[in-house]
Image (cartoon, rainbow, N blue to C red):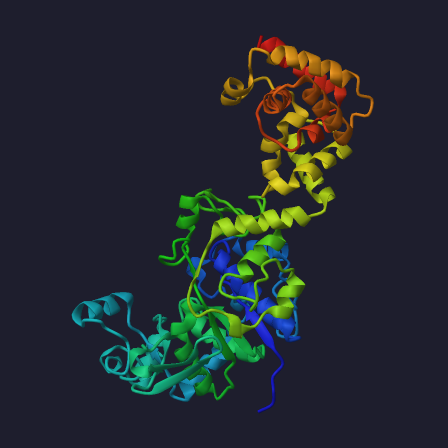
Amino acid sequence: MTERKVRVRFAPSPTGPLHIGGVRTALYNYLFAKQNGGDLILRIEDTDSNRFVPGAENYIIEALNWLGIKFDEGVGMGGKYAPYRQSERRDIYKKYVNELLDAGKAYIAFDTPEELEAKRAEVANFQYDASTRLSMRNSLVLSKDEVEKLISDGTQYVVRFKIEPNEDIIVHDLIRGEVKINSSILDDKVLYKSADELPTYHLANIVDDHLMEVSHVIRGEEWLPSAPLHVLLYRAFNWQAPEFAHLPLLLKPDGNGKLSKRDGDRLGFPVFPLEWVDPKTGAISSGYRESGYLPEAVVNFLALLGWNPGNDQEIMSMDELVKLFSLERCSRSGAKFDYEKGKWFNHKYIQTTDDEILTNQFISELKEKGIEAEHDYVKAIVALMKERISFVKELWGQTSYFFVAPDTYEEKALKKRWKEETPAQLKELITVLESIDDFSSENSEKIVLGWIADKGYHLGNVMNAFRLTVVGDCKGPHMFDITALIGKEETICRINKAIERLA
């Protein structure tokens, strides 16, 4: 058997926003393709017309673009196997439905939903399979003339795959090893519905993967029960099956069950890459982008949920992930979604992000608050504070005093640090500050600390009272870094204001 070129696909359904678990699947496909010099295909699986949600497809494409997951062909970019939207390929699928029917490997079933429900009520654990299909209304028991008349009368039908019982089906999985399932536990799955003239996921997926020359199918663990059926379908068409790899589930933060949107709502973290507005209800779901996460941080965080590089390295660029990634190092067990670790990754990436990028983002936020500030001044504040934040949106809460003088003073700090002698000491400090020509952080610190030592004052009380007057609280970066930025005049003005208010 000749070795096939690596070709993988990410094939989401436009039934709503892309879940973060789907993003991880897309990422792993991308890493595998790039590492092996292969192609990544974006295919939209929209054969379930009842669940189609307007805007979902554009959302998926925008989210993947934001994350830097680039495709080689597919929806939005074309390619030699176009179209890549399954609803536009119905004529292709009909050909293969007829091929299975002609070969006796599939049959037409006319059972109504009511008839199926009645059968389920009559037979415990009813399954449409070799043991029950001859008691149903289908082309296996009806004559050819009856079948043709029902179809010509417009009776709706489905095409079911005819699964032979008691056959061991082997699925070779690159993560889970050999999986063996007996065909008797499988039902005769619906492959095609006349109601909308579209195939189900099972047939469309197989046909498209074959025609698009997909070499590896890397998808979530939830699709593992479908794998035996897909193996049988490949065999029915006498096609070479791709290699399978079923990724572990993303679990709730406590590890107890599959991660859901409710977990994010309950614990306050996004489960979607971008903000999503439900077109029916108008309900808004938070997204990683709008919550202030950097795409590189989200990619790095997701890559390590269910895979490890074989060493202790945690911070990895996309290029590094491509070099290190392997399916062999993917876990078989589910990965807990540690959203606090996600924040940690964002903090690390904020630290290495160019100050100019963060500055422009922060200036936009300041403008929304009605604050105009010089670009270089804001950039100096960002450089000073970026080590302390996990998100740009935290900057205002930690730096507001750089832009607006405090009107109030933190009560606990005031009780602890504002002594009877404090106003007199601060007036002396004003005199010291006025005498300083070089108001740089290093020089101011040297002169002020020298004055405190010469006077024999309590260092902690004086410095904390000083900070309280300038910041409004006993928090923030190095005190003299603050005063160097806001300047001598503003520093002295704030001290005077505090002495007056707290007199």
